[in-house]
Amino acid sequence: MRDTALLPYPVITAAVQGDPDAVNRVIGHYSGYIAALSTRTSYDSQGCPHSQVDDDLRRRLETKLIIAILDFDLT
Image (tube, rainbow, N blue to C red; front, side, top):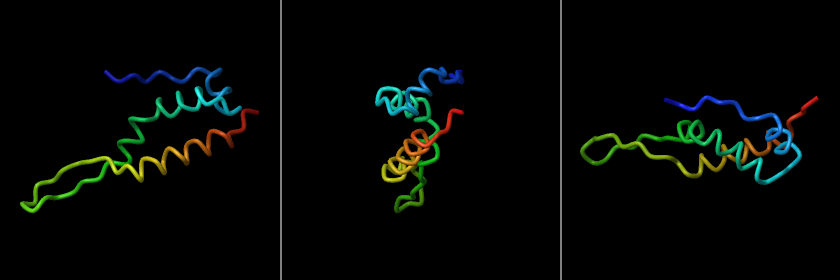
C-alpha cells in the first residue's frame, strides 16, 4: 500500500524559507513521482524493452521542484 500522507505544514513552511533539510524532505516525498516521470523505455538489439530512469531528466525535475518550493507563496 502506498503512503499518501501529506507533508506537514511546518515542513512546507521551513522548505519555503530555505531550510535544506525541509527541502530534502519535500524532494524525498515526491521522489517516486519524479522517478516515474523520468522513466524511459529503451529497446535492445532483439527489440526487448527495458525501462530505466533518465538521470538528467530526474535532476531537471528535482531542480524545477526546488525552484517552485522557494518561489511558493504561503499567504
